[in-house]
Image (cartoon, rainbow, N blue to C red; front, side):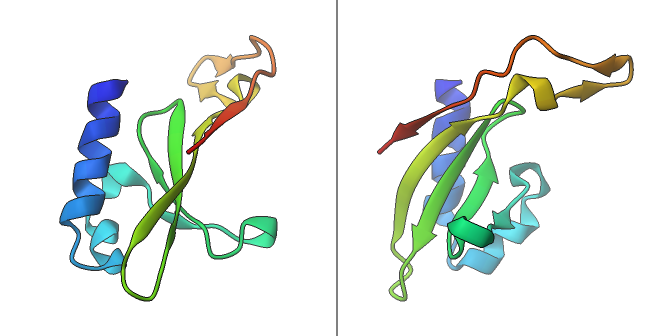
Length: 91
């Protein structure tokens, strides 16, 4: 998990602008909406996402590392329902 996190942070650092993140399909980049308006999100792996804000000066501030709710996971064999654990780490 730590190595994947470092790789994603490397992608964020190397991107010359936010649109560059679209070229890395594995990041599954999203601009969030609703109460998370103006917060961006990229995938670390299938369990974790990094949420961040971008200023006009292209400075990235990491807001959260989110763990996906396990009850949301789907597989070809059905839905995993191992519990409903979800957490975040404030940076």
